[in-house]
Figure: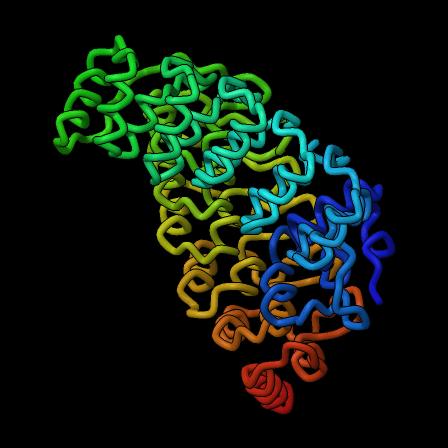
Amino acid sequence: MWRLDAILPMQKEESSMWLRKYPWVIFRRILGLRFPLGCALLWLSLPWSLAAQDSTPQLDLCRGPLFQAIYRRDIETIQRLIASGTSLNIRACIGNRTPLIEAIVMRLDQIPGKMILAGADPNLGSDAITPLSAAAGNCRRDLVVLLLERGAAVDRADSDGFTPLLHAAGECSDESVAVTLMKAGAPVNVRSKTGATPLISAALSRRHSLVRKLLDAGAQIPSDPEIAVFVRKIARGEYAPLPRPAPRVRDDCGSPLLRTIFNRRVGEAEIIIRAGQGLNFRGCETDTTPLIAAISEELPEIAEKLIRAGADPDLAAGDGTTPLMAATFGCVEDLVFLLLERGARVNSTSSIGDSALIHAAYACMDGRIVGRLLKMGADVNHQTKYGATPLTTAAFSGNEDAVRQLVAAGANLAARNNEGKTALEIARDRKIGRKPSHDLIYSFLVRLIDH
């Protein structure tokens, strides 16, 4: 069985986080690829080959059995651990989350309720979220009621200044969750570090009825004239375009724009973008940029707004990954073309030598993105630090169209990766995850070499 610590030069705490969140990193050294190039392979092509000899992969090595069972969604084991009296009031060594918060976020149906009834502390939260906020944001009114009955603090804010009511107003379509919190005494005029209030969040989400209830409960209409008009129109049930205020934004290490993107708070992200705040900021914790985060979080509309608002198309994350690399791996054609129009450098490389063309050769099967990159001057024979070229990458993924385009553009058929294999040998020898296109690629390359 493959072991994570044998593949990655990481501490156990770090490796467990990457294994849970980003399983594609495991293939960094095996494939000679980077960023999410192993993601599709691991998730789609390989039936968890890392655990080929053990159908239960080792998740979160630095956390206890309860956390591991939660991440595996192993309900039977979770229930057995709860019944055995295992401690529910512990924090994970990464992220400081508790079993209760993780169970809520993982949407494990009845498990969070059983944890609360078994003694899980309703106020033990992580730096980023509390159990009540997690329940409110996930529209779990039953858990909200139970947590409040067990003494959960209705006004406790997370590190971004978001209270349970702010989460409910902006993220939950079930109005009764916010109403329950208000009846329990949730303050209606709290303001997050990004400038959001329950009233603004509900208005941005076009929740007309909730806006009226918040106003009836004493929520103050914002002083900004444009936002005030917007809120009043929503309260009257009218359609209103998003306002264009310039809120005061704290652009510190946490980056409000990054946080709103990671939490998929699209309306608030749009407001910050329109204000032009923090567009080219790189978070010190995530080491990424708002543009790369929006692409990775599959928020193309936010990514496009960032580009058009002036986000640097070449500002890379800490590992050298550029917006163009992120967009090419996701095969987001409109964003790829827009980034190229805005001057994105087509041959930028990451810290291990990945390029946009290598990402596209792996992931984009229709050929348009590969063709555009080649037309823009992408290096057809570039090699990563692990020897991967666009051609060997396309051969590995079974991308026949890319193989043909790369060969036509002058790809070196004799190039070998660090395992000593050419594209032909890779297509010939691929076993796990083999597709009919691998045979077609092999036949095509054999004919080329024979001639």
